[in-house]
Image 1: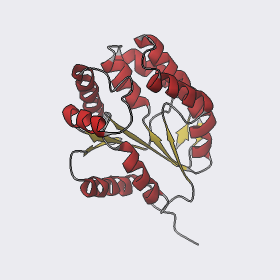
Image 2: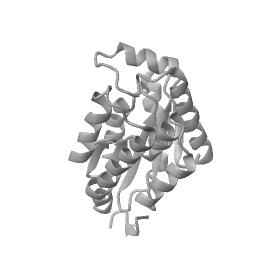
Image 3: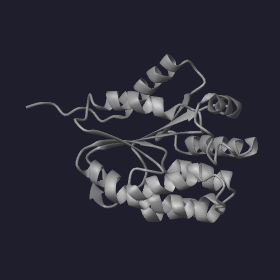
Image 4: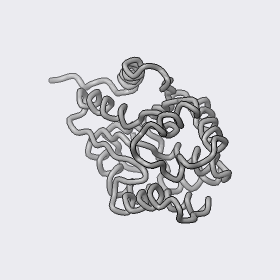
Length: 220
């Protein structure tokens, strides 16, 4: 498999979903499963993963009162992704590392596209320019009703970020877009019901991940 014209030897998994869906919990289990097949597993996140990405993460998620327009938001997220790809994701995949990314391009299509009302075609064209072969080997969408996600967010000790502060209509648009993306690419995006008990969600993750991983090479 190639990534931007270069050979991809690792495995690229992304975790998606509305806030409160439980992506961080699943990332730990996914890492354990991938280590049975790959000696090196790297967990990263967006925005984040690089000094630029982490700085923008603080800007977006902590500076809630700073006005940022929809187009500027999309471009800043995309700039962080470009650096993330160049510094972290592409080198790791080329080296044979399994990469788990908490949020990726689908988040931008859902949040900045559907949530902010930007054209999905334009947002996707920008992502395709950043990385012509950006699509992961597998994307797991943790689907959750918006009200349940908001309830879980309110139960956390940390203050809400600028996205969690948005109205229900924003989150409904995000969820709807996620499900549309999954319907359009069912082989890449596997939907898990995140409202189920955690052990059931983790078992479902194991099933879809084992089915998506390439077969282990036979020994000599």
